[in-house]
Amino acid sequence: MNGRNILAAGLVVALGGAALAQFKPESAYRESPEVAEHYPDPQVAFTTPAFAPGKADFTSQAEMMAFLTALAARAPQMTLSIVAKSQEGRDMPALVFTRHGPDTVGKGQRPVVMLIGQQHGNEPAGGEAMLVLAERLGAGNLAPLLDAIDVVIIPRGNPDGADRFRRALSNGIDANRDHTQLRTPEIRAIAELFTRYRPDILLDCHEFTVAGRWVEKTGGLVRIDGMIQAATVPNLAPALKQVQDDVVLPALRSAFEAAGVTYDWYHTTDGSNPASPVAMGSIGADTGRNIAGLRNAVSLLLETRGVGIGRAHLGRRVQAHVVASEAMMKLAAQRPDDILTATRKAESEVTAIKPGTPFIVTARQKPEQRTLTFIDPATGQDRPVEVKWLSSLDIEPVLMRPRPAGYVLPAKAGAAIEALQRLGLKTETVAKAATVPGERYRVVKVELGAKEDGRGDDTGAGQIVKGSYATEPASVELAPGDVYIGLDQPLAALLPVMLEPESQTGLAANKVLPVVEGGVLDVVRITERPAAALAKP
Image 1 (spheres, rainbow, N blue to C red):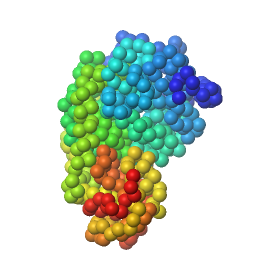
Image 2 (cartoon, one colour; image 1 turned 45 degrees about the horizontal axis):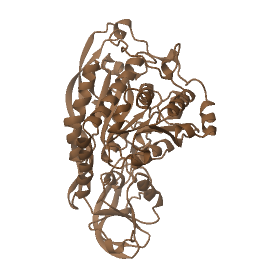
Image 3 (tube, rainbow, N blue to C red; image 1 turned 180 degrees about the vertical axis):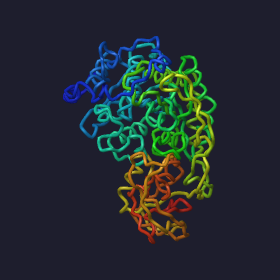
Image 4 (cartoon, one colour; image 1 turned 135 degrees about the horizontal axis):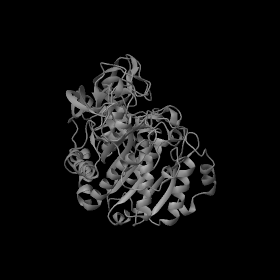
């Protein structure tokens, strides 16, 4: 739906919402003047809603939709669509920028850059930057880039959380931990956009806590403007890792250094637990950054210095996201063939891996020691602190298995089959009975426990099934209606994280596939493609 033709009823609903988000300025941490002077505003004027004169809050749902609708009316290269209704009924818009027709986006003719803002509702700078970038692409100085690239922007991945100024989605699920299960309409919409447009570069824009846990643990505030991390997930295609490390991250660092944005690797901790290490971002597949890597996109996370400090330094925070996003778009426009070659090579690498090749089922971050520089809350002086550090740059395998040709699910496992299809995986239906060699999973032990990340907490995910399993050889009886999911497809790297039962982000751990101690799982591994038994396409 083009912006000029957006449904009037939808616009009325969008504009009829609360004028202000539920942000409470009195709750924000107040920096000392000695700290604040380290973060001067950039020499740039933004014209998006949060920067209106006298504004004491952030951009509301109504203001965002009014801004985008007005922009679409004067930007012929921009298409505004409502891709989902949030759980509380708010519009979730997506913007597609192209000079070559929307039907050509994602067809491999030009690199596609996807930008996502505000998956966490209390992290507004990324969402505001999306509006700045939309204006510049639609009617400003970035429009010439659209000769060489296409851009997809999701300004606000969590409309309800933004309205309530809280991290989670309306039902309490962390949006950025739902990218494998797709339990929520908001994240399903992002997955559908990924499948439709096949982005080559993704930038996921967040903000990090400035005080809180860091003061508890180190006595200091976080000093840097931004934290960055590329996809760090087991079984990432080598072509992606190479282009991330050798091309994309250097371009981002250069842009930051030219703009005076200070940065380091992304890291977090549990401030209330003295034994908790400082950990880089997760190696689990359920974050936007990592799922994008397994979807064969060059993928980056950017978090800016913003959670807990209200509107302090908002211009500086927004500018950091703008700088990073523009750097990614300019890189893609300057080197389109290199970017397309890398992502298509990644697809080929994943598809061509032979059955029997080992892959990682579970892994851990590598323990190290690092010195981080914080800032003294009173004096504004640097405060070096040595920390236990968990690195995601050097993943240590814990459990490995040989790659099967594919997996089979019985027809009764409809919820699991639908979950795989929602991710964009190709499934094939068994048409004729057959017996093929394979393996079953025997459930040795079942426990319930928290989903863990590097800090040891569950990031709001609740209890998952943490069983132990043994594989055993079997002659697998295929029946008509069963479903085969082969690993000879570009999204094959998603299958182990969904179907290997030890995976914390998979279907067994998250209770989509039943797990009974002493029994066998519905999913089986098979060692050859059952071509004669499958329905003809």
